[in-house]
Amino acid sequence: MNEAIQRVDWEKCKLLPVIVQDNANGEVLMMAYMNKEALELSLSTKIAHYFSRSKQRIWKKGESSGHTQSIHSFNLDCDNDTLLLKVTQEGVACHTGRKSCFFTELETGEAHSDVEVNTDAMYGVIDTLYHTIQERKYADPSSSWTAKLFAKGDNTILKKVVEEAGEFCFAYKDNDEKEMVYEAADLTYHMLVALAAKNISPDRIKQELASRFDMSGIAEKNSRED
Image 1 (cartoon, helix red, strand yellow):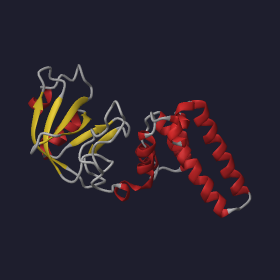
Image 2 (cartoon, helix red, strand yellow; image 1 turned 45 degrees about the horizontal axis):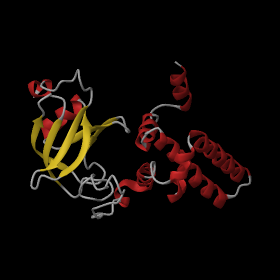
Image 3 (spheres, one colour; image 1 turned 180 degrees about the vertical axis):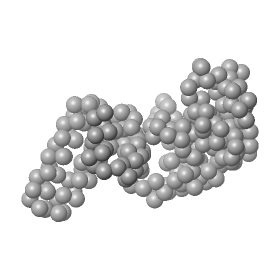
Image 4 (cartoon, one colour; image 1 turned 180 degrees about the horizontal axis):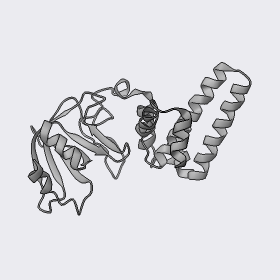
């Protein structure tokens, strides 16, 4: 296995681009990245594992949805810096519920394939909302509030985060439970827009919170000051 991993030109690509193709019909399903650890896991299990740049961690394809990829073959290109996987896809490859991630016609912006699986319940409301925000990042500003925020830029996004945080604080001060919930939802949405602007997945927030379970608040604060 080590010999296979070393065939990749890691000096040229710290993260190996991976094209994923349906073994049965040749359809291109998605494109992702692997680091050495993800490639090793994929080779040893024959189940696709990737490295997520937005989550900054290894992820097993289908870990949330159950839509895993069984690998039939690993094919390295002539420059040793791109990998082609031929897989059997369980369920669908795309988080939108479509078979392939390549469904948007570039010139018209129209989707040319239908959603096959409702993935909202699989990913949870925060991840689903984050993906929706990402999809609207480059949309026509008149099409949605999210697209308008991105078009207006960082200052507008940050102003809204501060504004919603203030409104939550006022609701807390007034002991208005219903308003606190409403403003917390607004604040969460605008924070997700800010994260999406920097391509930071909410999964990284979950990882950070999880890392603090065995650490007191004082110890955690001190660790940031070191």
